Structures are given as C-alpha cells and as structure tokens.
Length: 454
Ligand SMILES: [Zn+2]
Image (cartoon, rainbow, N blue to C red):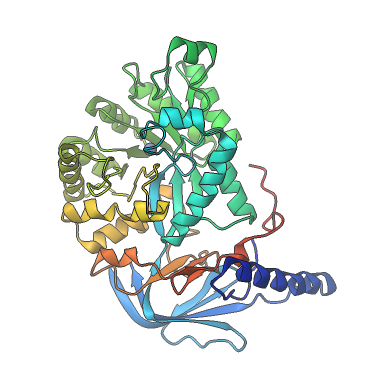
C-alpha cells in the first residue's frame, strides 16, 4: 500500500491536484537515488474529543499519529515528532469511519425519465456510464464520512468490482468497497421480463446471474469470486421458486472455498426462515423479519441489513411501510440482533448527494427510539464486522489503516452530529478538511498501490 504523503491544502480541486503532483516527484526521486528506505512522513492529529463506539466513551485532548497510512500511536501524552505535519482538530470530535452495509453505487434511478423503475435504468444506462456514476457516488459517500461501503449488486457488468480495484490501486478516492458482483438468483432474478427480452435478448444478465440447479449455483459463485467479489449476494425468495435451505447451504459452502460470506435478499418470512436455518451471514431488507426470526438471528449472530428507508425521502417510502419498518427495527434492537446501518440508497434525490441520502437514514433509527450510541455502533463496529474489516480497517487503533472522520458535535449525544462531517482521512491521507473536499493526494496517473490480480 502507498506511503502517506504530507497533507494537501487548498479548497479547489485543481490546486490540490497540482500540490499532489509536486509532492510526487521528490518522493519518486528519493526512492530511486537512495535504495535504503526512508521513514515515511508522520502526520499528527490533535483531537479535541475521540469517540470509541465500542465502549460508548469519549476521550479528550488526544494525539493521533499516522505513518505509512496507518495509526502508529494514540493517547493523551504522545510526543509529536519533529517534522510531523500537524492537523488541528482540537475543536472537533474524531469518530471512526462510517459503514453503509448495503448500497448500489453503480445504480442511480431517477424520477425522470424512468419513474424510478430500475429495470428501465438498466436499459438506458450502459455499464461504462454506471461505473463513472459509481466513482462519483463513492466520492460523495466518502465526503459524508462513509469509509466502507458494501456494494450489493445491481451494478451492471461488474462496475462495483471495477470501482473496488480502481480505489485500491490508487486511481481515485473512495470508500473501501466490499462488492458482491452480480446478484445470483433463480430464473428472472428480480426482473419480470417478457419472453422476447428474457430468452431472445438474455436481458436479465448481467443485472442478475441466473442459477437454478446445483451445478449452476456452484458455477455462479465461482464466476463472481473469479471476477473479484468480496461477498456473495443471492435472491433467496425473489420468485416463488426461490432457494431451499439446502441450496442456500450450497451457496455458503461454495462461497467459503473462496473465503466469501453470503448475503441474502429476503422479502418473505418463509425466505427468512430458510436463510437463517441455512446459517446465512447477513439478511438484506426487513420484509421477512418478525420477532421470532429476530430471535434466531440474535442467537446465530446473523447480521441484519434492514435498509430502513426514512419517510423524509419522499417517493421512496409509504407511511404504512415506514410504520412497519420502524417497529421491526425497534424489535430487532430489543432482541439484540447485530444491526448494521444499511440504506439501499440507489436513486437520485434532487438536491442531495448520494452521501447525504445515505445519512438521511438515521431518521428511521431515531424514530425507532434507538439510543445514539447504539446507532453509532451499527454505523461503525457492526459495519466493520459484517464487512470483515475489523482487524485491518475501521477502529481507531494502532496498526489499523488510518481512516476516520471528525464532526463538531458528539454523535454519542446526538447522532445528527454525523450530518456535519468536517474532516475525512482515508489510508492516512486527508480527503476533506474544513468541510471542503481536498482529494488531490488520491489522484494518480497509474496504479501506485500496485496492480491487483483479482
Ligand atoms: Zn439493494
């Protein structure tokens, strides 16, 4: 992974880009002339408050040192090394990066022209365009403090995996992407195509990867793993034929060979029952949830990605559905189900960025009466667990990749503090400060972090 560079100042992207470019040259020259590795520059952050979501506590006046992209020291009595770049966040609260456990960055359906029917979006928007949308949406998510996004399918022909690779290789800024590749489902996926479209034009693919038999299930999992998925997403019950408990177990065992977990899109109680019986990793959406399913999920520690659309996103939620969603979220919390913060925010809301749409979902959590420390836990700790990054990325701990955000208020007291993200660091590099994106250091003319095979 890349070495952290000194922070890039300047609010205009052009200024930041120039600054980043001028910093590149001496670094390269130094590497070429002196084979002995020079120590990476140190960044020291003065944090007025530092929140630990795991314990729900706040420490004051902390010093955080970052070197080589990782946290190297955290505490009240840390000496700032001579020559370190100092970032003053003494008036702000430092919080670990946020996780959206269910988004679709390469999908953006709209009221005009497709009346928010994504089947039409898929026909109108080609994968290259959607990949560029994903790059933009990723930047918008990062600006709102989301340093990890699980990208759960409906991303054209693997645009989610292209985005993961581009960010990891160092072409552009963005959250750490946990992509699913194509959603695997029985005949038709989530579409209801005409025979002409489904059979003559094979229109379901690549929005869905159809797998109806055991052989097809195995091959579909292998295809996604081969092309770079980090999680497998299946349609448990999108169609009446759905998947049986045994078939879901087959998905889980095949995915495990590639080190991948399985998330199920579930929309019926029967489907949820089959998914939890099979021991699935996570369940998306809340339509199959009830008190008894929640109790099993808590017991087996199955993650809940409920995608609780707030009523404030007009046109995307109905009063009846919202009431049920709020009650179910509350019930999941009361049953101690591992709750993740998940949005399914895959549409355009005029006047809002994708990140602002995602953060709006805290409204549902507030309506469910969930205390702010538990909402923050869902947005961080449980998010790292479902993403399987908890040992490498997420917590503000020595040795972890240096990702964090800073806000004026304290989200342990009011979760609304997260609406005002003033500062974002990713991989030890400043992405946003003073409320302004300064992403120059993230743009490179080549794969500076290395070429990835997968
Ligand atoms: Zn979704």
